[in-house]
Length: 234
Length: 294
Image 1 (tube, rainbow over the protein chains, first blue to last red):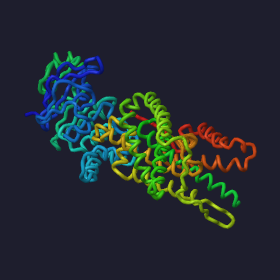
Image 2 (cartoon, one colour; image 1 turned 180 degrees about the vertical axis):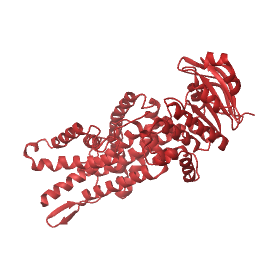
Image 3 (spheres, chains in turn orange, purple; image 1 turned 120 degrees about the vertical axis):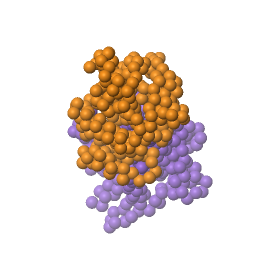
Image 4 (cartoon, rainbow over the protein chains, first blue to last red; image 1 turned 60 degrees about the vertical axis):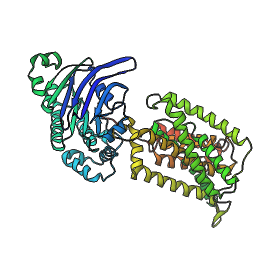
């Protein structure tokens, strides 16, 4: 059984429908990407999954229905969400952001925080600095570390490449990839940047105007010239 | 000199009350990004709880604690029943501000309905005695107000900077959506913020009431001074509320005694000071300006 099994997911804003029945799944420890252009519904998919907007259809986490669950409850069930634009809490320090990330846990956070400072040394150097004063790449790393602080089983990662320089984006992907292999955490990534995302993920779906039009392994998607031309702008 | 010290402590004592209300305003401002116009009336309501408990024979200090509990419940109910259903104040600021103006009128009318329009006397918490220093007499009540303000400020500091609950409150104040995604129960945190702000209003009211009496208009003038205090100190700073409150107290109670032309308009120095501070530092003395990088 898949860790996350989504069937017929629909969502929208007010009277505007954005998603028209998505089916996809993520296995435990697996990195999956949903690729799509601007406005195809990538962010909406993640927002619907984590209960930030009303949604229809079904989403099961280990067989338990989770659609419509409030974000803080969903986190307790093991799903962390790194929102679009990173969502770092700019008025708190780097360390306080990590503490908030682990706020659902009752055990000591200090060990985990130190570990993240080893994984991302630049965060360690800035631990007492306000998160809002850091660069976009640093904030993205903080947002990812913060999501992992809750020791999730599944991380929803919304377009980490947004607004970052290509070199920084590659670095972020490299680090998240290492994390996924090391911790066995599953990741559902939504991205526009097909090349980097397909290196990172093992499987992918292509989303167009609220519908999944193609799916396959990363190699299949990368190798298919027609798909690249039609959907990935390469 | 001794006369000056007497005036000074009257000013500081009154300023302490403005600071207490100001801290409640800052607590709500930091949680919602809004000024709560009903803050003073909620404090007045809580002060009536204090009066009622005192009237049935409880010791005054116990009545104040009871008033804080009652005020906290009123604050929590206000958030849950009236403020929360209106929507996210970050998205509909005007709607929520107007709700707080409505609450101002509602609490005022409700207090008159429940407790009538009589002036209800309340004894000073620290008695009517005075501390004699040479030829200077300072009312214990004023010193008590300063001491209580100090304790309140220390407790706020510990709560906000040293506890997990305080961290969650600061997180929600800064970015409610992200806080929710991090597992913070946002509405419960906001509920606690409103309860806290309203509870400390009981203390401010208990210090204000002996100057006149408990009635429905008790906190209207102090609320204006508290607004002045946080304008001076910065809307988002507890330190600013304390410094601003004390400064407003001193400026309105001490300066007019010595500066002839403002004798007849004792509030003028405070508002002049605010004008100057706002010209130089629009965010107030201790307020923060936001710098956001993306």
